Length: 154
Image (cartoon, rainbow, N blue to C red; front, top):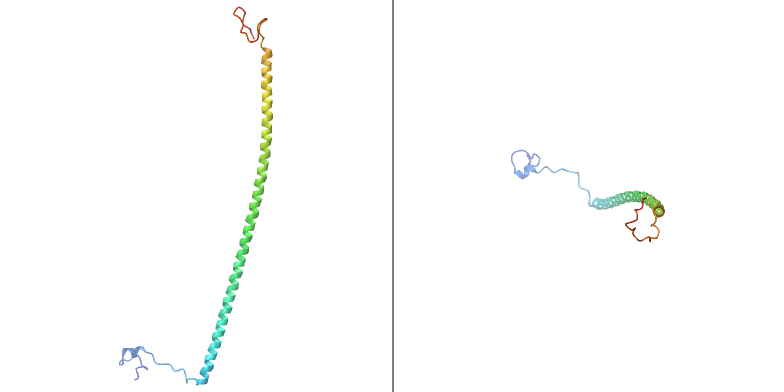
């Protein structure tokens, strides 16, 4: 028995036992067929290369489309955020103007009230001076009364 035909039978070397029997694919093609086969393989390779390029282009187009969509969404988001910040800014400016007006009104009212208080103090002093008796006859206003005159009663 041939060692290649029965690789697991006893006898023969260990390498022969591990090598499988050759498989016959039929008769070999003539030399003209080999040239045609090489040309076909080159055509197949060029077709495969074209298909790979087409697939690569399609993937690139898809990635570019996704990238453009992501960029469009980012621009939309930034535009919305910008609009919101502009509205907040305008509201803050309006509030600032309103507070400045309120401050100016308060300062004006404060000045008016201080003038009124000064006027009231002046009038109170005038009344007090009118109610106080003046110095006795013959005395100057800045002379103290003498001891023989009784003190003035109010």
